[in-house]
Structures are given as structure tokens and as C-alpha cells.
Image 1 (cartoon, rainbow, N blue to C red):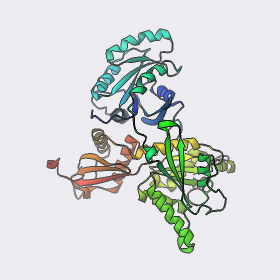
Image 2 (image 1 turned 180 degrees about the vertical axis):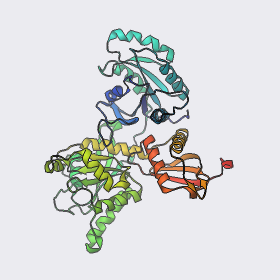
Image 3 (image 1 turned 135 degrees about the vertical axis):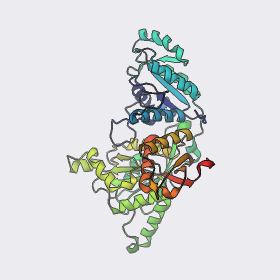
Image 4 (image 1 turned 90 degrees about the vertical axis):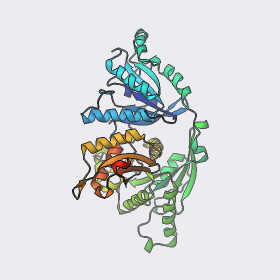
Length: 453
């Protein structure tokens, strides 16, 4: 396993049905479905920021490992789960290895332990389902796996504090980059979508004029914003922009400059919050806003505002029904997570900040080269590269060359043999494997003969 600089990232791994997700939810403090379109749907790898007594760190949950440490499974679902676990281990500096104390040390536990020993990561073994002191006595059986053992019960919240009191002090100290460089968040959208109301709700202060008259906000207004206290407090610079006007050729110079400032705000931002009006749905002007975000190569989250009003107007409307139509209207924004909010009632406002943090982190994702090539190899096996002029595109290897946006360089025999639909498929496979929700990604094909490899 490739070594990596220690980060404040903790991954939870283990075989199926040992209680990994229960422990994940216990540590995070709530049931989590991070910025995904359907609540309650757990991806193979779920990442979330955890806050344990003021100490922030990223926590990664993985699917159950039913075929780990052996020859790769032919079952695509099983193989995908193994890949996700490998990604999580590669990303993390610390591992919580979950086992079932009621079942004892299973052969698969031993296989997972061997892989974790080879990884070089710091591992804590959580003997879960230790619901009472009597079961704690069975922890000695897991000593053979070679990791410090902590009897815990995720369901009953037993032993969690002892585990975290040992783990948290070992987390590397990191400088808080948002102190010197606050996370710049541009809130954009067409007029009267609720941008200023959203910022006012965040700030709990009428710092920005809110009006039902489109075009009230003429300038791009920057407002400092902080969440938390002390060294780990997160610092933001919220940018409220004037709404994109319909046709600048027929508007005043003031409107022309408003659009220009919006463009500049997007360029200067780290993450763009694109505000949509739930009642009217996306329009041609929304598509123009989306195009600006894509051209600027910025991380993005879509907020569907005024959801409370939409529900009042149509009793049968649901998020599940609304989403497909929205995705169909904005297919080029499929990479961006969608969250339904109400600036008026406060619905999902706190979660929107979590989503912004999450997207910002995704834009800075660094993918281990070995894991990246394994995912691409699996993608090529499922859907072989195209054939052009009688010659098939051959993929030799890949490496990540940049972040913000994510840049992937792939060495091939002849880039001209590539096809747009296959590259789109490959992007989707990479997003399925690594998340990258909200993060723009670019693939560059570079010609290289096999002899040069």
C-alpha cells in the first residue's frame, strides 16, 4: 500500500453485518446520507465530517468485505465493494477495524487483518455488539489479530468514548487553512431565486437587502462567516451576487456590470452555490448560470429553494418526483449534488453548509495512483475502449496531475481513437468509485507507446 502524508481521515472497515454503519452513525451523531439524492441510500463508501468533542476529522464508512485479500471477485458488486475499501484504506491515516464480538474471530477477519497490517496504517479494533460487561471478556480472542482491542456497542453507546480517547489524540495536528484563506462561496442564480434570503438565514442577520423585486442586489457583496469556535472554527467568505439578467443588450449599464461582477465572483470562488426556484423550476437563464460555473471549472452544489412553497402549491409533489425532471433539464450538471432547502423556514440550511464543505473537500481529492489504475482497468473490462479505423484504443496507465479541478492524465496508444461516449462513461465510473460529487473533472489522453511505459 502506498504511503501517504498523514491526514485527519479515519476509515471504518470490516466484513458484512458487524455494525460498521451503526458505529459510523454513532460517531457522526446522526443518521447520515451525505448530499445524495435519495435519503436512506448508502453508497459503498460514505464520507462525512465528524466532530468528537471539538476535534474535527473526516470519517469514511465502507461496504462489507465479503471477498477481501483474495483474488478479485468476478461479481461486479463484490469487486466494487473491495475497490471502495481499498480506496478508503488508501485515503485514511487511521482505521477502525470492526468485528462482531458475539461471532468471534472469523477467517475473513483474519484476512482483513493481514491486509491492514500491510497497509501501514494505524488500526484500532472495535469489537462491536459488546452490549454488556459480560461480553467484554471475549475480547481476548481478537488479540491474535495484532491490534489494540476495544469492546464497544454502537447501538447502546458503550465503550465508544474509550476508543475515541485513544484515537483522537493521535490525529495529526493540521493548520486551519480557512483562517488565512476563508472558503470563498459564491451564491448565484437568476433574480429572486432567494439568494439573499439564504445568506440572511445563514447569518441570522439582515445583512443583505431582501426584496420580492427582481434585481434588488446590484453588487456582489462579500460577507465573512464563521462556524464553530477556537482553532477548528471554519471560516467562510460568502458572496451574494446580483441575479443573472435575461438580456444584457437591452438593459442598462448597471445590469451589464452586475452580470460582469457575477462572472468575477464565480471565478474567485472555491465553491459555487447555484440557487434554483422550486416553484418555477429551472429556466433557460438557469442553464446559462450553470454554463458559467462549468466554464469556470468550479465546485458546485445545486440548492432548490422555496421548497416549502412548492409543497404548499402542490400537495402531491415530492423530492423523489422532482429530482428526475430536474436532472433531465440540467443533464450537464449531473456531477453536482442537489439539496432542497427553504431560506424562509430554515429547512436543510444547516445541511447545506455541510454540503458546501463536502464539495470543497471533493475538489481537493487526491487519488492514489494504484487505486486509480485499478478502477480504470475494471472500467475497461466492463466496457472495452472503442475501435476506430480498425484499431482499438489501448489504455496503459493513468495518474492524477491536479486538483481544483480534478485532472486525470491517461496514457494511451492513440488519443484519436477515443470517443466522447466512452470518455463520459469513464468519468461516471471514476465518480462512482471516488465520489467527487460537485467537483469538476477533466481527463486528458496522452499518446504513449507501450515500449515507453
